[in-house]
Length: 314
Image (cartoon, rainbow, N blue to C red; front, side):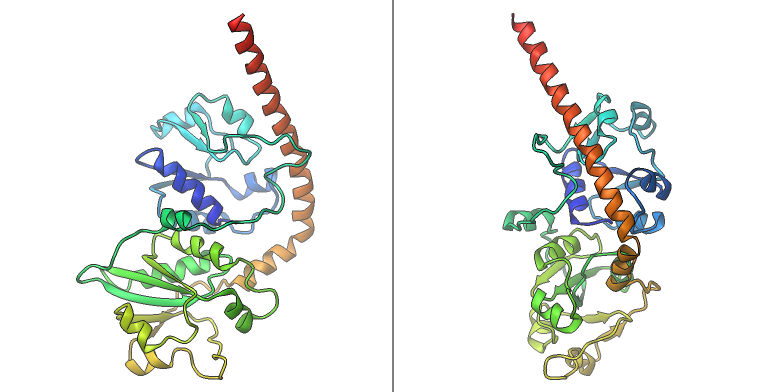
């Protein structure tokens, strides 16, 4: 998966320098070390390229980052999230910086498991572009759940952004209750806060409306001075009263249906995960065992350094 956690790591990395190069591993490398990938290598490449802090991508990058790799691309240093098993080898590289500044000493790995995401206003500010529409911009509005933000969403937003030389794309995100109303089951899988960061990280998006109304109203269009409303080829569910949520822009003649050429949906992503469920479960169990070994090695490394400092003082 490529999600807002990765986006946040890349945002932090870009803040450390001027030009960010991201290495994307092959399907074979991921399968070997982590289990079957949800996205193909080509899909991951496009997903990472869509993250607005990324300047260049190395496709098929080696799993372990070495000085030779960094020198090849004239890199000043390598930024690592500290969340994968090649970190021990990477730590031997003098140019490696670790974003995670501490390692846990509990009986469970902090990297494999369930975590609770807590949204803050500061985090939204860090992800947002902060740019206002400029004279001559074409203001384009799209709305949806954008759940499990994936390559289908990216291709759609990319196609939308190409409708104008100066696009200003506003994404309206529906609240969780609204998404559950028209999607049913256990949707949305990601809550409104997680979906907000996922969309804000996309380079094709200028602004996000958090908790946008399901029916696109005239007031909304006038407030944002919308020139064009776009929707993909996916099904349009009726509003609570059975009405067409796109009735107003349709009547105004500013509604355009986009074919991004990608039919992947959130349901499709879920089916991929379900298909490989047993493999994922086995992978996580094995991964946590290996991660605990890594954490123990890191703790030993810190203890050895502490002893060396004590001996130096004596």
